[in-house]
Length: 161
Image 1 (cartoon, rainbow, N blue to C red):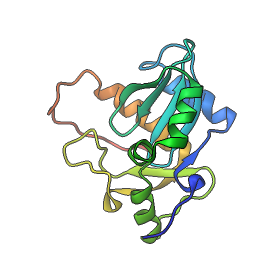
Image 2: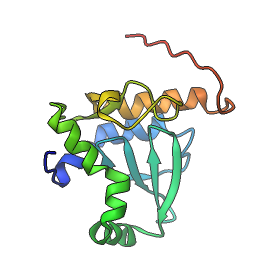
Image 3: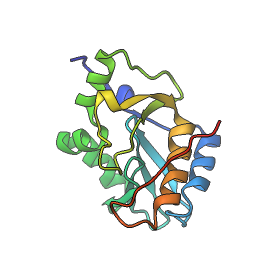
């Protein structure tokens, strides 16, 4: 497996992308929020107006509060290897690199089948390199459309260029 460093597993949005991503996810995160850091595998950590830090998993569309404030979040990232492994999946990123899937600046990983679906997995065969804006904005639209469906509902996704 390839060794990975922080820049291999995390990135920050450019300001114009951050604004567009915030607008795309406003149906789920309606309050103003500030993106702090993103995972190359689709997680996004945001600071809300009450200073809480939330994790949005763009693969599943789930949001979870992870820290009371940014200082605690930064400390968690520094000292908890287990949380870094859970949120940023460095072993998976290492396997993706070994398979020749290495994002450049402005790119991250996307899914052939989203993890929100039964056959969607966080694995090398189901992931590919994609522009950050396509992943984070596109997933907002997919999750918005399927949000009201009961679990197990059949879904047909039509990709239009």
